[in-house]
Length: 350
DNA sequence: AAGACGGGGCA
DNA sequence: TGCCCAGTCTT
Image (cartoon, rainbow, N blue to C red; front, side):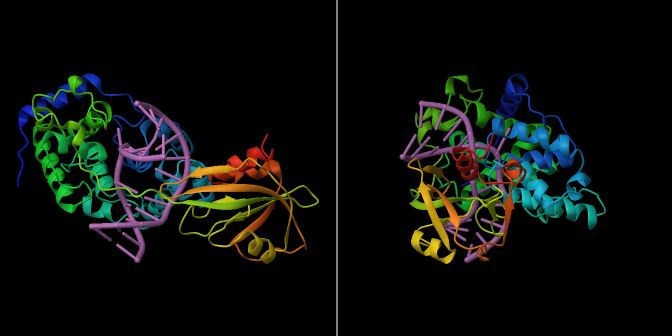
């Protein structure tokens, strides 16, 4: 089954976009570095969340070279709270790669962009089209939703058939306008009008929309079934030495929250409380009744918060690295949100 | 094709 | 609560 885009649709879209588009710090920007930063931050993250992070990032690292010359810890600190920390690590790796291997020349071709860590089909098309105005269709969750409704595409959105179909439609649309703006117009329509709970009466494409004619807009796109996330339980420990310093441990460089610093902790399904305290020669002083709860994308944790003391003066090498940190210095370490919450509850942060 | 990977916004 | 967000990488 093939679908045809028309110039009428694209003209209506672009006219609407010209009228209704939001102001964003990166809108109108053509510096590929800045487009890159914005697009990576915007992966699975809403515009309003990204804006302050983007402003701070560009203030701190106005050019690509500033990122490459920075340290990974500084990069992670700048990313703290944004989530999906591999994005920041890849941005850093990519910056070093462009500066050192490509001599600071930002790649323009889709093929070269795809080689950069963290840049996949979406981000490569976004940089190629928005920074360099090349005709590559940018397909994100917004655009997928718009096309699924406009053309009544019944494939599951995660399937390769669906992605192919949508990419083809967007690619067709680029012949009737500047790729950099047509791509952004599709995304903006999905973000402002063709939302999960759509505002069809405000849509510039309502007369073209097949789902609208069939009164089944709410049934599209067809999403894969989502499994509900399991609940896990665990403990977080506040451990102070005689100098009132707090024990902080660093997570390993892969997996969940890679490289971030946190309070010593355990998940009971990996290591029960008794095993953990015994292995680390730890004594519990008292526990907080209030538990810290935190939801990740694929599971939820409920942490009990304990004051604890080390039974001896050594600490084993269960973690990659550990450090005694004065409470005033805690905030200089990139930390997971749930541990910032725990530190606040414990009165460690002013 | 399916899972891992954060955190926040919203009904 | 559940769903979604300018996705990518690994298995």
